[in-house]
Image (cartoon, rainbow, N blue to C red):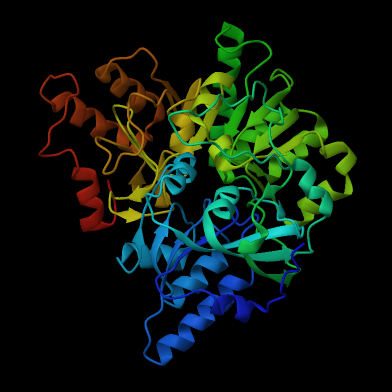
Length: 490
């Protein structure tokens, strides 16, 4: 049985070489490594000071802790990054073309790694609550792509984090898929089915050593729900109740997927308080803070996700009540949590937030003014393309009214009109199902646009030459250009 070497963070960082493909565990800040990345940034700074080149290629599950990404970006330690990020310094480096960024659907990453599309993973840095001498790795709060990283990395560094209760492994359900063409059916028929193992089995010879840590995930609580978020939440509530009452959603309800953020937080709180919304399950990427409270009240009867993206205090609530929570939370690899076939089969209702929508129903969730990356497409496309109902939400205006989220043509498109079924702002609801492009334009402008922008949007639409999707290419981006020139779309 193998005895693992104990390493300092600096020892571990020294194993990583210039131009290595490095994989970090986690999904959001949950389950991502804490100390080796910081030591790696310091190593990069020291080597740069000597005039030596040092930068890695970095692949993760989704984002990692903002401090991790920002420390690495500040140290000019990353030359290539995939598939998602949410840190300000890394974002700036990407938008300055200092880091080559690959924006990907999160559900596809594991398969692309197994197929070798990105080359070999040289080193994987994986957070675990425990690892056995025969190579069983027990992950912490974020599963993400860690099982695939563990399987395919040449070398593995384990950050063994004693902050987490050993009982967190009770949530884990690790299953990795085979490559086509002989991939078997995923035998998951209910949201809470367990079909894998609580650990990931690997060759222990690949583990170079263990770095001991005791740190919580870097997750902050969301701000108090603002008026706009609450109005959006009530419109979502109104729409879902209407679908329920009309019989288009079964009276037992359907699983929900919810993105992370203040709007999604407000939506979950609002649905949780409504007695006319049946108790429901969730099939999602992330278990966020508000959902823990809904599990405690019984409104959410169970959730399948890829990470516990909750504050340390809320995580402690879970640990203090493990007898209650142990059968109500399942954490899966993201190729399972974001699997298109499962999303379609389970009939998931997807709730995601976009940056802008055009009058025909296309959605932009990743790029400001079509050029500057915010975070990335993440998993929204995995769900939006395959959901029973794909709902996108946003405030109708931003920056005090200087930006309209409804525009004639999106400057960047992540989600096409063919998959976006419903758009909801604080102004109202645009149900796009069964509508032609011209009908969609009238519904979106009339129901979702802010009053200060409705007239100009109508003017654009009615001045366009009749066609299937009426556009005037001379003026389709006038609102965007006006913002660039004057600081306002008005």
